Length: 61
Image (tube, rainbow, N blue to C red; front, top):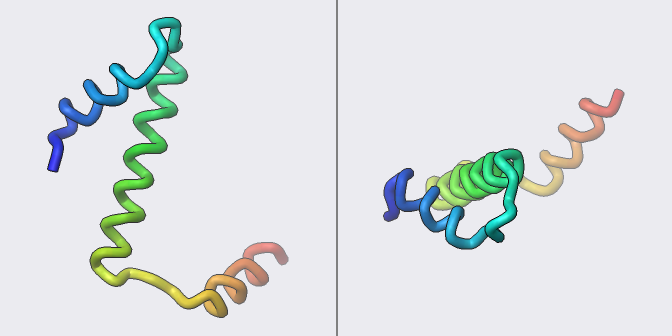
């Protein structure tokens, strides 16, 4: 597993040279949230599709 510094270095290498600080921060944010989601899947921290639909109904009230 890559360290935080290694992950940021990889992100920086993948972005164009004219990337803004906002672009860099956004990409770090996205990558971190993907990691959180994948870790949750590995741990089995999931909800069913029906539960998700019910939560969305309650949130949209």
